[in-house]
Each structure stands twice: as structure tokens, then as C-alpha cells.
Length: 328
Image (cartoon, rainbow, N blue to C red):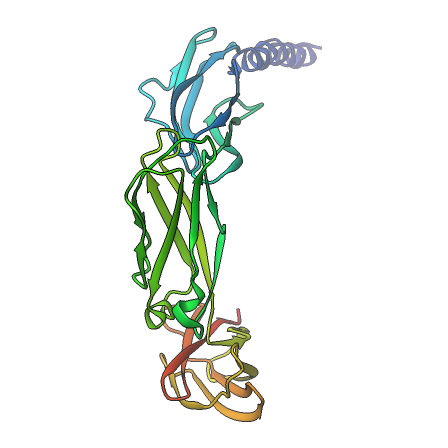
């Protein structure tokens, strides 16, 4: 009987001491609540800068600990000076947001990482709709490597709010373009360019940024896209479950996009894993049999790569790439 009483006393002590501890853990949960988690700026100008704050409060009964605030492109969030908040305490997250250069609606996301177990990655949203006061046509230039001046005609830039403006500069990473335009203020501008097709061949696609002195539209842009002289299908060969010394053969078609014949003069492998032989020629296409010999594994790496550089018709080059993974 005494033994039974002792056991009962031990069990009772465990129940009455453990139960309040569980309750205190629940009562001590942190909980973050943001006053306005969605900021909608409506219609904005391109590259317009907004400085604002998200106000929040710890509505839980435990200490709120903010680990970090994750930002996305276009948003800057400074390092928080204070990262711990008592129950009922308020705080704010300062944000610097730069609107998109491109026309249209945009939604950006930020995330508050904290010890709020019910929402450890609290999502914030920033919305805006970029409206351009200047229009650019065409939206995309379709260029050619065989047409005169690469087929570049003109870029038309005009005011949508009937205000005159100046073009203050044009930027493009591709040095193939020499732009011509008036520096006088006007409601409409015509931009022409002298294009070096040889230089364009090395960088076929890109962005042209047009800078203006318009107070609500400092930068507008258009893109260019150029059809390459030749293309490979597939352009990249994938080898899976390879073993050292294993040989893989793949058919690759080389096509002239402008209707010319295709003659492979040379084929050089960057790392020595690839080689090829001509199998068939048809009109403006040539079929190659490309051989890949998997190398020895080095340093425990599961991955190997190579590039086969083809010299076509004596002067043009085209790369066929290979990516391989060793068997495990």
C-alpha cells in the first residue's frame, strides 16, 4: 500500500508540474502583425524612388525575434538596428523602392524571417504600374546579319503627354551601333544608327537605353534581336550516368539560317572530350555525328563539360556544348 501511494504521489507531481510548463510555452509565443502588408503605389513613372515603412507589432505573449528581412530586386532594406520586440511592442521596417523601367504592372515581395512559428516567413508586397510618358517604337528590333546596315531602319521616340523633350544619351553594351539623333528638344525624335554587322555577330541580342530630360520619364528602352548565321540542334548535349572512358554518340544538325551551304572546316575540342565527323549534307544543313568520351573523375567531381568549336565555311564559328554527370 505504501509503495502504491508513493507511485501515485510521483505521478501526481509530474502532472501538476509539467502541465503549467506546457501552458507557459503556448502563452509565450511571439506573433508578428503588419499594419499594411501590401503597399500599392498605383501609376508611377519609370525609376521613380519611394521611401516608406512597414509598421508592425508583436501581438503575441512572447518575445519576437526578427532574424532578417529578405528583399528582392528593386528594393533596399537597411539592416535592422533592433531585432527583438517585447509583447505589445511596435517597430518599423524602412524600405527604399525603385519602380521598374519597363511599362506595366509589377509586384515585388519582401519576407520577414522571425520566430513567429505560425508565420516564420511573413510576406510583404509592393505593387506599382509603370506608365511611360514617352513611347518607343518598335518595342523590339529584328536585325539581320546579311541585310544592309543589319536591317536597322529607325527608332521612333515620341511624347505621350505632348511635352517636348531632349534625348541626352543612348547606351548599349554592344559596340556595333553608332547612333544618330538630334539633341534639340522636340515632341518626336527619330533615331538612326550605323551598324557594324561583324561586331553584331559576336553579340546578337541586347538592350538599347534612351536617356531623356523628360521630368517624368528619364529613361526608355527597346531591345534588339539578331538571327545568327548558323545554329546547332541540339546546341548542348547532355550525358547522364557516365563512366570514365564511356563513349556517347549524338547526331547534331548544323543549319544556315540564311540559306547558305554549310561546310565544316575545323572542329576543336576545348577539353579534348569531344570529336565529330560529317555524316550528311542537305541544302543549307549538315548532319554531324558528335562523339563524347567521358574523362576520368577528378577531385570527386560528378560533373564534366566541354565545347566543340566548329569553324564553318572558313570564317565563322559555332559552339556545340556538352554537360555530363558521372554515375553514382
